[in-house]
Image (tube, rainbow, N blue to C red; front, side, top):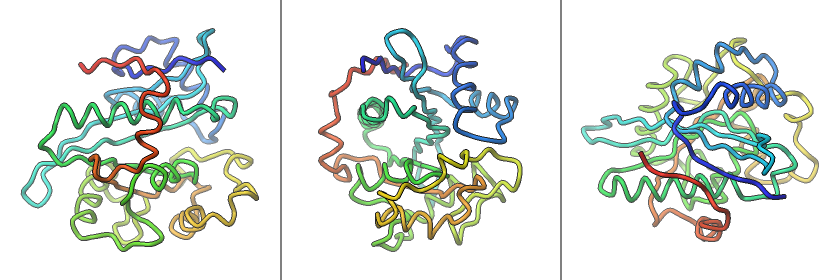
Amino acid sequence: MDIATSIVPQKTLNNQDRQALLKLHQQYFDNVKSTTFFKDLEEKDWVIIIKSNAGRVLGFSTIQLVWLFVNGSEALYLYSGDTIIKEEARSSCALSCAFVKFMFALIEQHPKTPKYWFLISKGFRTYRFLPLYFKEYYPAYNAEIPQKHKDSLNAIAFYKFGNSYNSDSQVISFGNGKDYLKTPIANIPESKQNDKHVKYFLERNPEYFLGDELACIASICESNFKPAVYKVKGVTRVDFIWR
C-alpha cells in the first residue's frame, strides 16, 4: 500500500484533519467524548499522520514535549498520547519510522539534555513498541525499575495526571471518564497470549479494557536503541521539519 507519513505541528491541522482523527479514534474506542478528544489534541505539540495517497487517514499519534526538573536536573519528556493505526496499514513501518525520526531530531536538537519517552498504554500493541526498540525500558518483566527512572516516571506521570496516577502500580485510572478499546480490539489474539511481554502487560494493567493506562518510560539515547531502530530509520519517507 502506498502511504504518506508526516509529522506536523498540531496548530497547523485544519478542521477536516481534526474531524478525521476523531472519526478514526471513534472506530477503535468506546466512550469517546469529542470535547475531551479535542481538548487532549490541543495540548499536544506535534501530530504524526499516516494517509493513503488518496488522502484518507490511516493512522495517527500525538506528541507533547514536556520539560521538568527532577532531582535538581532538567529533563525533556516525549509524551505520546492517542495512537491508532488501521489494520490495513499495520504491515507498514510508517508509524515506527515517524517516531524514530522524531527521536533522532530530539537528540540533535537537545544533545546535552536527558530525554525520555513517556508512553502510556491501554493496549498491548502500544506497550510492545518498548521491547522492540529499546534495550532498557520500564516497567519490564525482566528488570526492576532503577530509582532514577522511577523518579523520572513519577514526576512526569504526576505532572500529567495528578491523583489519577498510582505510583505503586504505575497505572493511571480515570474511572468512567476515559475512552477504552472496543471489545473485539481489546481481546488478546491467540497468537499473542503466550508472549512474555503481553503477559506482563496484562499482569501490570489487568483492567486495561476499562481504559486504565500503564505508565512507561525509556531513555531516548542511541546507546539505548536496539538494532530495530536503525533498521526502520529512513525506510519510509517521513515529511518533517523541526520548527
